[in-house]
Image (cartoon, rainbow, N blue to C red; front, side, top):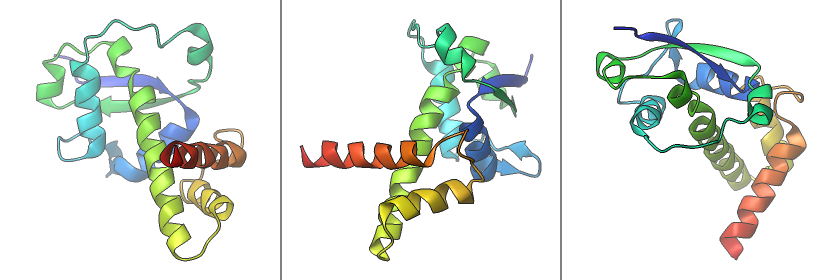
Length: 147
C-alpha cells in the first residue's frame, strides 16, 4: 500500500507547513496536529469539485512529500484529493496570519508591521505571498466582523 505522496503546493504554503509541522525532516501528519486533521479531511471529502483548473494549477510551483499514516493510506488517497491541501492549508495559513496580527496588536504593533513580521517569521518573500496581500486580507476580515 502506497504511503508516500508528492503533492504540488503554493510556495508560501510549503514554507508555512514545513515551519509549523516538520519534525526530524518529515511533516507530522499524525491525528494530533491540525495538519494531520486537515489531511484526513482532504482524504474523506468525496465531493466532486472543479477547484483545480489550469489557472489554479499554474500557481502550484512547489512540492511537498508527505508520508501518510496507515489509516490515511487505507482511504484510497488520490492526487486530486491530496491537492485539496492547498485550499484547506491556505485557510489554515490565513487563520494563523490573523491570530498573529491580533496578538501583535495587543502589544501595540500596527497590522502592517505584524503582517511583515509574520511573513518574515515563515521566510516568505514578496513573490510567494505579498505583504499587501496579507494586509488586505486582514482588512477584509475586519470588515466581515463588523458587518
